[in-house]
Length: 500
Image (cartoon, rainbow, N blue to C red; front, side, top):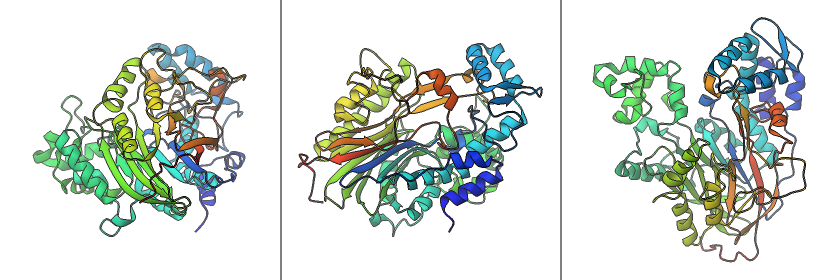
């Protein structure tokens, strides 16, 4: 089979990407983590269904109609990229100005260029190339809506994402929506968690995800309503919007979802899935012993917990993965704290339970919250860092989330550097620059210490400079940067469970 790099090159060639950009976006090989270090990767990969949202991207096409530092206009003119940035920032918050900006810069060349950067097949192959290059021992993905595809790809690279003892009874992955799972009430949530964990796949779908909802709105939802007939159409329709409701499949009996998808033209219903959090581990280094699933109260998201055993040291530890709710206001932060972190059945309780069971704990997450989101009172950073004890970002932020005074001309690191451009359907978000550190790896310092960041933290001199390198890009196929850190098993961490 051709290498992932060769397959990616062929795909980008079909998308008419310039050869120099293909070459410049190829990942080099990096040194693997030295034993006994454990290389951990946290990566929000940008769900396929959510990638077509008008992200501003740099030119990559071979047939780009203007100089590379410029962008074309609908009138056939050209302006410098920095001029487009200035106009967007000036128009931000002004609906009339934003609409004018949209009209000025919406053209076929820009649309084709964006499609080349966000093309799912090319992005998937680049993520595989990234993994080949950095060779992490553990991978925690967020916003993964093609789990079955990565299950096949990463198995070829020596990774697994299913408990060995579950493979015989559940040899094929089956999306949760096909069985009409729900986590909206305690009884349904408990049943889903138990049944899902028994299948052994280290993937927790966000039931009724915005990713799947976005995908359904592109025509498939309408066809499902047409196929539903009078018996089911009313219960599937959003009465206010007249379209397929977000949690549509939870209103159907098991088996009916697949029938409707096929009637709507989906030949293989198992290809339709919610996005979620997944954990993969390198089989040459680690064995998976146990899997637990904990939906958050109210459902929609939750915590994926995996117990792993290191073959080199016989030490066992727990890896937790989650993806907190979005929003950058203080009200959004309160929602995360009250509904996902500090609540009964929330993240802090899960971490404490794992620690009380004698486990060393590593927590990987897209928190949608940066260390300095709140200067006083509780924040996700303060609570979780106190709960775990350490973060891979401790060289840059103190326990209160304040940037440390490092003699540097650069801002503290960020893991999100995106801006929606004129092609975005969300006109009010055009020009909004997400320039935050929101992806985290927390760990228990009794058992681990940070050796190094394998992926160098992304730092810029200013937000304005960061706009010159907006994401996603061909090199980094997501609107988030990966966090890849080498953790050392501490000799003093003798409390590691060595009985499993």
